[in-house]
Image 1 (cartoon, chains in turn brown, green):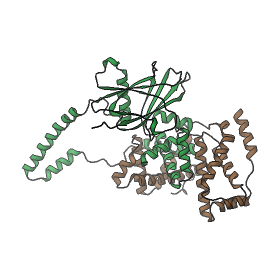
Image 2 (cartoon, rainbow over the protein chains, first blue to last red):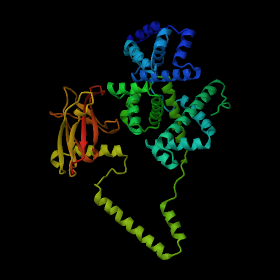
Image 3 (cartoon, helix red, strand yellow):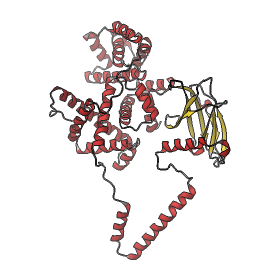
Image 4 (cartoon, chains in turn purple, orange):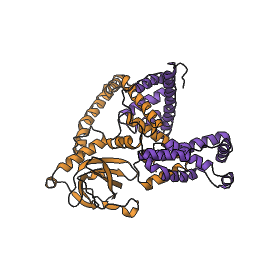
Length: 204
Length: 284
């Protein structure tokens, strides 16, 4: 109960969204180029979420937004006079936000799902569709990778890399790109399936 | 820092299994080094893969369940990895092409050799190798009844066997060493140094316990970079601490960290002490 009260108090205290001007100024401060600013913003967001999750704060996304809002609300003059990379500043603000709110908010969401649930079944169906849409080259990388990993070969990158003549780091990066695309495809497919049962438009 | 040890430290970070100082170091890098975020994202995806594929150690599995699945994004990623696992179980035929058996390649080689003397020489050489190599290996290598098991499992079984024996039944050359708990700061000065002579087969280590009142303990051995080597459960304390016999070959020259966790009445474990040991190459 204590944690719920603390969480509600936290929400009331922080429910002040940024104005459009504040947000635009903030993005310009991150980078004058809008595309690069958006990338920087995503990078900062991702890091802050890791920061809070590492401290077992389940409302990590909310705390991340609060951290970004606090920095974004700094006066324009302050931002103009700020020297150096803004990234470490977010880290410092996150530590303060954590100190203020997080200790009492240790709260977990659902435990890991069982393998037999319907959600998993729809994922497997979509996965088959998405694997079929991969290029042969990608399929021949990702499936042996998972098979190797399943045989408890945690270092299968090294083994596969040697076989394919690629260094393990490059192979990891390549497999991660394929995994990310595959996951995005599966997520879209599952969402489509839930909506209209139509997976024909999903591509990789 | 090597790529592999970096990956292991990131994995320990994700499992919330680093002390405050180590965590701070990682986060300072995370908020200043552009490349580290990409590495952490990969480490996170691989950790989830390993959990879903059932290849994590029990300890990491528990840590992940306790400290990791905290938001919807991670939960969704886990469902995706579990779907991969389900898919792999559905497909019967392995994707990798199996290499041709060695004897078929050998017979083919013999078949292409028309000169019988060459073939006979090759056959004789192979027979000699087949007979002598296992004998030599058997003479050189110590007997290992667990050789077909994965390395960590082999180590843990050997440790269990060794620690079941009574002290008087030990006939192997040993070294006795007592380790004091360290504070959490890692100074080089805190490493207990030891030089293990080549003929020493077993280390009898005593881990002195701080004021801790537990009936059972877990000991986890790691390289200081975070590479977990083995863990031993259900250790009972003796008046002078925890006693553990470790084959000397398990600790080649390197820096090691031993973490002792106490288990409370509810079965929950908590860190009790950390010990550092530096094994040096014997002076020639």
